[in-house]
Image (cartoon, rainbow, N blue to C red; front, side, top):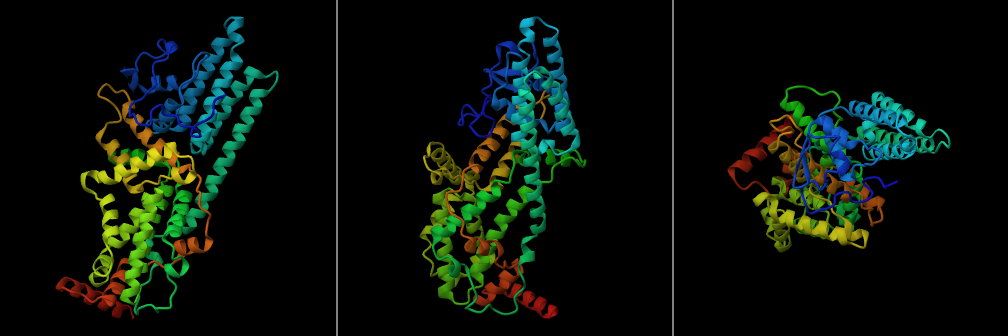
Length: 479
């Protein structure tokens, strides 16, 4: 049997953006309504696309199509309903083979193997589709029918048993992670406290834990890869499903909660606020200047590694108003390196410079021999916005009612790229001391950051003076 997605690349051309799945010779009689353009599938009815998903005695869909359709189908049909339709087609084909000639009956085992392979790819790539009882019931029903094709030696039964066991393990692991994640889901501001006095100069800071920018960048990358590994393709597809439910003014109770996406986005915010906190809480200007330059070097190392998400978070933290307003501090900073970083993250022309750098990192990753060269961690909120933009500018269905498969092909291609990058094994050893600090160090709220900033360098204009006056009044009222 073939390897299952996503262990190996499934898109025939990573540089192309159109579906490469040609019409199979035997498919002409099965489905006549899918529309092809230059040999590429661009649209079709849901029924025809489902039929194209199900193997026959002489046909097996290419893995690109399987991934794209299974990913996008949830926008139109519940996974358990799709399973039921797949099961109905399988049973119909099985019955036709059983009533056929001896030669056709002999092909039952081959047919069963193809159906199992489809189910195997489905359960491994989208295990969360089987979290509810309805989906598991449909899966067991199909499995039971298929085992009848090979009752003599029981090989099919053993394979199905192993597939089911692996699925249950995957669901259990994800459930445990969700329980742990729930305990630590807190907004950024909950981690900070409003300061009434400046912290002591002897208080622990990031430089006392790690003074090497490269090592800190590596530990940030370790955290990024660890967190991104818990984001699944169906999580990303919820962006489309959720927006559709909002557009239609209805609540979809079946939509998987996007906790994984929120948790990862929250990490970005936490890192930005941590950077700002570390800078603003420093008492002496000389040390504060050193802190700013340290984070600039960390961001540069993140860029070199291919960790664009941490790089952007650090830059965002330094661009927050409480940090950006520290003119006396910035006047002492060697800003040439920071200017280069900001150039890479320039938002003009839809972040053209960043996208060029990302494309370069992606190409490096494809030809890399070492894990260090394979690392590509995109700016996550920009990646999400790209999917959202694709969803908003293209309709799910065409005027004739057919599904706009070309749209979902492009979305799935981008999601597949992300899945490929997230599977890179982190080449850096975990430093518990550094990571504990990064993940648990106190983070100031925006209000606390401004207080610390004004105490470091007093207000310079009427607006800042008014803000400082308001903050002090607030503190006195809380006392």
